[in-house]
Length: 129
Image 1 (spheres, rainbow, N blue to C red):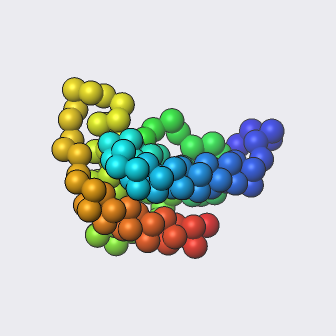
Image 2: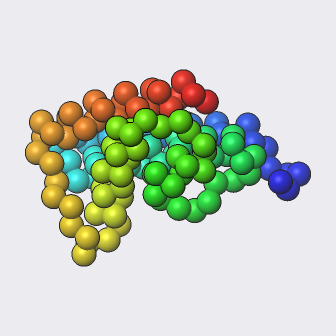
């Protein structure tokens, strides 16, 4: 690990960014901007996982977006349902970045349910830090 990297600051940076993104997600979904809400939902999980990766590897996280891979790098003890959920949420990252990969946008009720599940996982991840 390079001496000039402050791991505690890195973890806090990713944690704070994740918190902000989950708040934006709530606002976007409440405003019926579901496609963007789902992208930010993914981003919030990506950032909290990157906080875990920093803590685990004692270095900056890799520039990847795959939530399952980040959880593996962080050595998190995910149960099957959590891992499967992260795989599902990965689709919204691609949909937001690459228009040729079109994942069906959930309806408002489904988006709210996905947000609720995300918030549960998010809180679990915060508690693990």
